[in-house]
Image 1 (cartoon, one colour):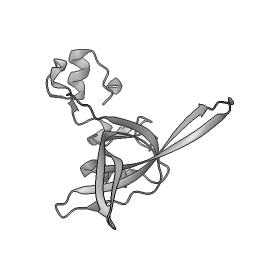
Image 2 (cartoon, rainbow, N blue to C red):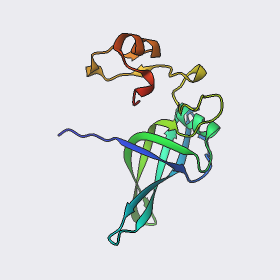
Image 3 (cartoon, helix red, strand yellow):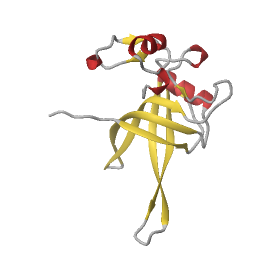
Image 4 (cartoon, one colour):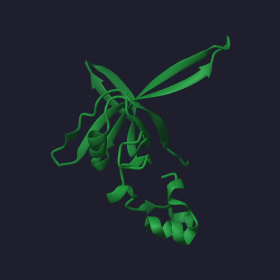
Length: 160
């Protein structure tokens, strides 16, 4: 049976980033994300509902978050769901969280021309490489210029 595990969330950080490093040197941080939803209830009144999501970021993505983000920062996270289970005081516990694989800063931060940044950007705010699916008919990792010149696709409109 096929399965698919993808999550895309946009919200605001609930606390400042606390970056830590494993013995291997790998950076990791756990962030809290508040995702707001606004809808009408049965009486027609607007109701705001906030969902709090725990997200774990690894490697360079965690370092970029620690460097540029703080409490209240708007951010878009793409990743996958993971169920953590453990035992505490003889009770089995579990928690569903998101493993963040990509992060996009939504707010502008000087020197970027107002364009959102991603954690995988290289020098000068340009993507280092674009990874495309194997079945897309395009080569593996393609530079920004190759995508635009050879395939008629504007790199700023690529959703990843």
